[in-house]
Image (cartoon, rainbow, N blue to C red; front, side, top):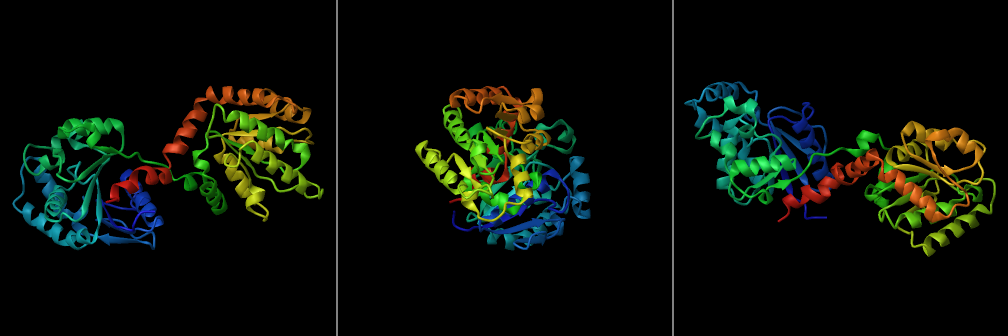
Length: 409
C-alpha cells in the first residue's frame, strides 16, 4: 500500500446528485478512503454520504450558481463579463485552503467543459501558484471536439484554457478515442495522456454478501479466466477428483482457470474427512494450490445460501462430474443464472440439462473433458466479454492498476 495522501476531488456537483461524472467521483472517493487516504470532495451541490469522506460545499463551484449562469450567458455570446476576474478571485479564495491541504487534486471535467469557466480560470491560477499540489485533469467530455458545445466556445481567454496543455498537470481521459481527440486538440503525443476507464462496482451490481467479497479478495477470483463453480458437498459420489484433473488439463489453454468447490463435508459419513484429505493430496500433486479452492478449508461455519447464490452470479460455468445424483438442483440454478453447464452424462443430469448442457462420462479422460469446456467457452462471446469486464473494468481493478499510481510521487 502507498503512503497515505490527502486527495481532493473537484466537480460542479457530487453524490447524491445523479450523473455519470458524479457517480465516478463517488466511486473514486470511496476507493481512496478504502485504501487509507484522506479524502475530500469539493463541489457546488451534493452532501456527505460516507463518514470517511469530507464534503465541502463551495457555492461558486456549482455550474448552476446564479452568478456563474449569468457569466456563462455573456460568455456564450463571446463576451467576457466585467466581473469575471472578481468571480475568479472569489473562487480562488474559497478553494485555496483545500487546494493547499491536498497532495493531489483530481478535477473532473472542470478543464474540458465551459460549464463554469471562472472555476477553470481559478484552477489555472492555483496550479501556477502552488507547485506542491499535484493536479490531475480528468476529462470525460471535451467541449472543443464535440459539435453540440461549439456555440459556447470562442477564441481567446478563458475558452482557450480548455484546449491548452497545462504545464506539469496530468491529463487523464476515460477512453482511447478520447485520448486521440485530446492529443490532437492539445498538440501532444497520445502517450502523454493517461487512459483510465470507468468501471463497475462488482459488489453493488451483483449484490454480493460480505463473506463473498472477502473470499473473492482472498482467493484473487477476479483474475480467474474462467471461474468454474462446483456447488456440491465433499463426498466420493460427487467424483471431485475428476474435477481437479479436468482443471489441471484446462490450465494448459487457460492458465488463469480457477475452480471453486463450495460444499462442506458430507454430513452422514465420517469417512468423508479422509476423502477431503485425499483431494487435498491430489491438489498438491497436480500443482493446483492456487487454482482449486475448497471453501470448506476456509470456513468451518455453514455457508449461507446467499453466498452460494453469489458464486453463481460470479462464475463463468458450472462443472458437475457426479457419478450419482438423485436430482441435480445445481443444473436448474445454473440455468437461472445463465451459466453454461458441463456435467456428467448420468440420467438425472441429462434429464434436467436436456440439449442445453455439455456432457462427458464420469470416467472421462480429463483432457477430453477439458477440451470440451475450452471449445465451448472460446466460442462464447458472452463469456469473453464477461471475463474482460471482470478482469479490467471493476473499480477495484481500475483503482489498483490505474488510479492509485496517479497520486504517487
